[in-house]
Image (cartoon, rainbow, N blue to C red):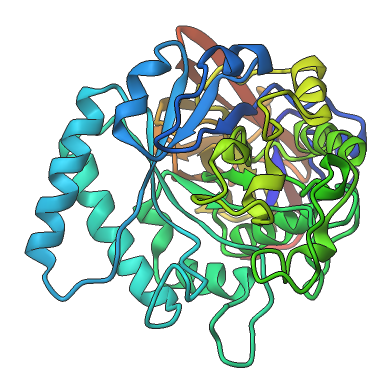
Length: 452
């Protein structure tokens, strides 16, 4: 499939694969990001800090904190577990979803990092998680269809020998192959940067921020273009030594994370550059939630001084701001309008047929996709050609986002030659009329009969 977002010319009957939405090819990506921060549960945090950061989202874990952020969009993490009692499970989700709806929560993330055994106790299982997600999605939508359901953010990892950790790429592929895309509005992912710069090229066996691009490839390989990826956790770990806290690499609270540490200034620089990269090059990305604001403020008996969670924080243990706090507050913010976005994905919109063909020939097909914030829209489809060109038919001519349009041409009355036509797709989104178009071709040859 080829992404088409506007009319463009080609020299032959084959559409050129390119995406004007890719800033690397010279285009400008419309604002599409949200800016979020994790707030530690059961902490008396100053809500004004979120305003200072200029974030429009907060990710919360505890119902009692929701009222403290009336001006923010809320992503709430709903931890769930595999069960043998699905009726009890449904009742639990139903009660929790009703409360969250009443409190005005915008989105619910269904569980967390299910590809790790620490979050899926009897061993990660993508099929099981997909079934749990299916039931949770159905219940949540029955309570409030407007709540955005986000799949549990996957941890970026490599599959271990004991399969206590399953590669995010393997796990995501199995989820998609089991039909998970119909059970989430947005896909949750945790593109931590580890100790690498955010621009570092991704690969299957390396863990870097841009690994999210490999996840996106899994979607496109399966023809799934209408689901944003929400970066529900990401960040870099600041060196505790800068605050005079000496954490041995063998400390059980720090082991396994020591190699991730970077300086406070590097943490700040990498974070800002990560937002910039996603803004420029990832039109499929939605809200980005920086981990975290204030795990550093928990007392040592709750969160050990060498706990890795403490050193991802934007605040120091005394409540003062680390360099990353000031950097995020000062960086450019291009906020999403949180509306669906009309995009067309097309196969080669071209056909060649004989001069005496008297039947309707199929030219091609394309998908009308919402590539923006979760939601649906209705679009009108119209084919337009030259007066001396083919008689064109599109079916259907009114379509819901996520559906496919077929294009046919009647060529029996045409003289040999190349005929160019356009298909226009229009919709009203957020009170504004939007339109996209693609170009197609019919070539009639001296050959007798139909060539299809």
